[in-house]
Image 1 (cartoon, one colour):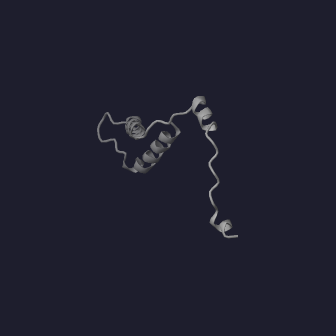
Image 2 (tube, helix red, strand yellow):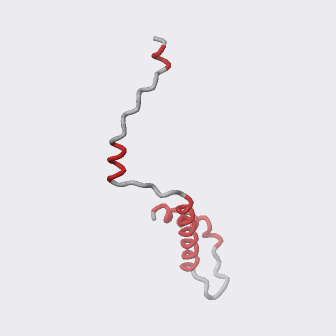
Image 3 (cartoon, helix red, strand yellow):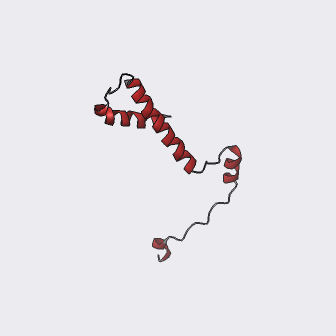
Length: 80
């Protein structure tokens, strides 16, 4: 929500000079609502394109039960 709010503020600030009340029903609130709506739709599209992360206590336990990786050979100390 905070990221979308920042995107709305940024778009509104960038487009504020272009806001015109061309028709009798045009309002600043309606203009801002349109920006917010499109930013929310953009956010929803981006979220659908990315896989959802799996988390929680079960995943944490599985990660903690993984064996420690073998230490990698350090090329600087291998020749010493």
